[in-house]
Image (tube, rainbow, N blue to C red):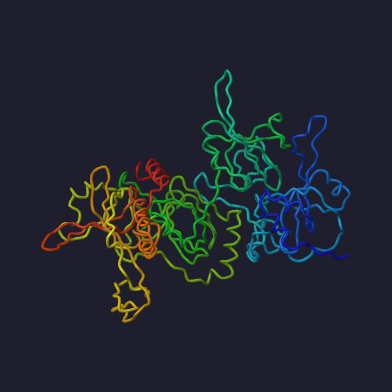
Length: 588
């Protein structure tokens, strides 16, 4: 018996707006690839009448497959043996009605909707390829098939206490376990609830975590609730550890799990937000980020002497590479450096490492950072497959300094007020000096904001108009139009005083949020709109890396201040910097 599947239905069901009932109510001819029983979890259950079982299914249209939930009124199709049970995780669609057409071999080679063929090779039968809450820990894959099955996450010797141990299934949690971590998807989050009684006032919210083994409820109260409520989002996957496992209060929960989680002050909830190594240049110095990479090289153990305590601090440097084609050096400190003994070319995920500008860009572990070797996440599987197939033979770009002016980044520890800079005589008598400051733009000179530059590669020289073309003497070429580049003069101020500073193209692009060509076009088209753009740029505060240099013009000597780099204020990074000062080994 042959059937024509409704090609494209999986994409429609996954991407259609929830209020577009026409897509969900229309008939779709799909194939069931697998079925899994989920114990009853409906609100209708009572002690005398337990809730009905639920079934999760995989649906295929021959091109893609998606995950769904079968409505309880269709359970008889499972009980009658018409549909096969198997593994299914992830995002759910409720199937309310269906007609069984027949049984046959799997049609086509469907891949999961929204995933690449590389990351879903093996189709729906491959455990670990689905982006759900993750599989129950499986044996480590052999070196010949490194990405076929997920490896058990391991813990680096000497790693921080936040490094995760092996991932546990939710159904395996009990009050008698201490060191556990679950990897689960938030399928439901309640509103923040407030209460008031004779014992006082408070607030709480609940979340439901789900992996392929089951579901469990988590509850947070008061200050912990305030901290975790914005962090936990429905549909996202998190690593959760150090929560209290309690007996479930059945009158408040309709889940069948005998236990629930108490989310406390020490509970760790982590979600990676990886930055490619090629993107580190866009992160300000002392900013924090998450990265994942292959350890290409490992240095021998060395040490530095703390200026504050005169004690030696062990250090070890790792060279990381990733699919972006870049490499970066990451430093481990203390016991992490001493205990590191991972195998060659291992994949490590780092959370909350600090970005430095030594050698262009570098990374460093701090007291709040965590690292995980061979994490049980899709990015790790993709990276392993790429490195084994082509990455090992790739030549990588290093973040390098171009010159002293461009390599100098904003330094929190060397922050100076404008008055401090003037009183210290920066730039005198004739040697340029660099400093970091934080200032607010008070005025921008609107005349001569840019100059017509050569559009040729690596030139940027000023061009002259000759009839219908623009001539570059350096390149000895003519162009139909120039590429305008910013050359700005601004008045900036802080709590101590005011100064005039000069900035070039990168500064202007940051301040105005557009290229000089775009700003010039606005000026020529609408002078009022141009003035509005200038007005919006006023009163914005930035972190500035500046150069002070003595200059003589018309027999008058003065100090000129130029902006080498400009960074928008990131208040989270600023707070993290102050926090890290309290825990860094150099402050002790």
